Image (cartoon, rainbow, N blue to C red):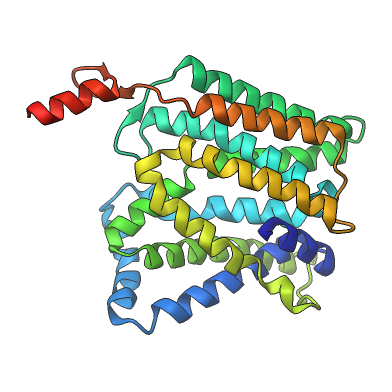
Length: 307
């Protein structure tokens, strides 16, 4: 639904970049109304810049909001032309691949996940799914570029829940982490837009319909749930567990709402392949320990009990 709203917003204002700013701005205003009145949350939010300067956690964690900005920007630019189903399949495929890499490197999770045949197969099928959904656009280079944009966004955004989760632990508040996420994304998008305005290549105007302001608030639940769940599930499992709902929902939106997008046979096939990729890659793999090496889950459990 967020992709559908932001896609329509981009069409209405005629600028996907401006649409992403409005979407992020809506989410940011809502979060500030929640966080600022509470003294503990307000102090935790104000403390984050100092904690960034002191590098109390690795500095990239503080900029996870940039990944969300890339996704929202790609929604505003490409959903109107591609449809929600093609956009989501391409996005999710990128996130699956990113999840494999991030889990292997131990980004944002308690244990590194070893590369397994299942995970690698899932990542390869994710690429196949992307090729299937973009195949109707092979003869239209500009459309192909739009279809690749969410895939790149998925690659970049795979570690966003990990960054948000680490900031939440530092601030002792998921609400503060989400607010910081929106601040970073909003500032980055706004600075870039102001540069465009200064160069005469952009104009600011607001959308005509009230529901077009809902993109940011719709993203709040997703960001919060992902940041809460990532430490227990890992990035890959988290991405794959959300895949089915996103793909099925996006196909229904394109099918039931006039003008949202065209559901090609290859779109359905690509979504099915992405679901299969999810099912395969979600098969548990070994955890990687720094010392003494790679241990499976059962072995770790036994050692912890003995300890």
